Image (cartoon, rainbow, N blue to C red; front, side):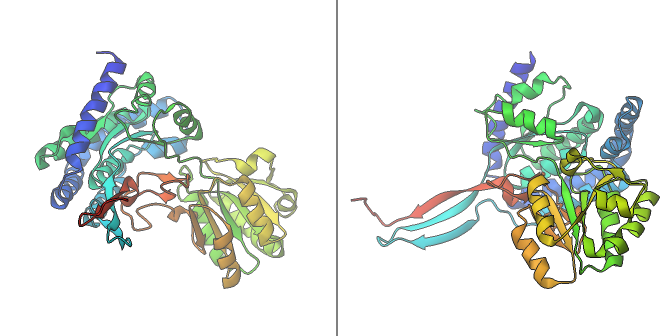
Amino acid sequence: MGIRDEMIAMGQRAKAAAHEMAKADMETKRTFLERTAERILEQKDRIAAENAKDIQAAEAKGLPKAKVDRLRLSDKVLREMTDGLRQVAALSDPVGQITGMWTRPNGLRVGRMRIPLGVVGIIYESRPNVTVDAAGLCIKAGNAVILRGGSEAIHSNRCLAAILQESLKETGFPEAAVQVVGTTDRQAVLELLKLEEHIDVMIPRGGEELIRFVAENARMPVLKHYKGVCHIYVDEAADLDMAQQVCLNAKVQRPGVCNAMETLLVHKKIASAFLPPMAEAFRGQGVELRGCPATRDLVPECVPATEEDWSAEYLDLILAVKVVESMAEAIEHITRYGSAHTEAILTENIDRAMAFIQEVQSSLVLVNASTRFNDGYQLGLGAEIGISTSRLHAFGPMGVEELTTTKFIAFGTGQLRT
């Protein structure tokens, strides 16, 4: 069977499975999620062995440290995966929820009911934990899912797929409800993107190049997760000790992820007090700073920033720094160069904090907290399927509810249209 025929067959199986999953009861879905969490912990040695193959291959290819870090299924990552599954299991089931009812003048009662999206396709890079997070969320929302991970995580993904299949079989769900594309041939991606008759929505997760490729070639709707050019603005009324800790966390806690800070904006009135010690703290963590002229006056060892730096998603220990005249200039900068992902203001002035929240139109806007909190698990959604930077359908972390849509329902007593 050729790749095209193989992908069509997967799509057909997923479509049939989606019909069954839409009828799945809440308790059986909960059992699947909890049993999968148990299996992951029970089989962590098996997972570690397969993950080590991917890590070894990535290091042999000379992939950057940040990209290798994305592949690593550490004990901490496994715990987060299982905690996420259990959080999702504990959430109320959105399928079948009626979100509102109203009565028309003729007595017809109209409402909206949540239903699954159907078949969800997910194309992603590096992070093998996406395999489990996405499968758990899609099952909870009554969907079937086809997963195509990157070749760099093939051993990890195949192992996790086998564990998911074991849980599906045990709970009586169709095994085609979760399918992982087993080939690393890139032709499989193109063939998946042609399956508009079988896949209802496509969600790409990865670098900007992958997302643009999917958006340009997909025949079905695409929920985009473009790059995370995340900003922190340190206001003149900021607590500078707190600001230093928040900025350090936002940049270095895990630099290779989309919610890490990429640009630091500092009000000119506190720049001389804040930037030199902040730069020293960053240097201690191996961060390369690229700054505007005002920044370089205060931090001479800073590399001159170019125009490209202001819109760069480094995913590495590199940070762009700019001194601004005002909050208005900071917001203008964010609007021009940002990616509508995550922004934060650090200030003790509540009026400016509220103005920043209202004016900055990103998927999460924070006050006095790290950008690293734009994450479904951290925001209480359980696992997430990605952070959508598209405003249609979903904006921000996509949890269970964002993997459903609504249909209209109506109750009558024999009304006729005249």
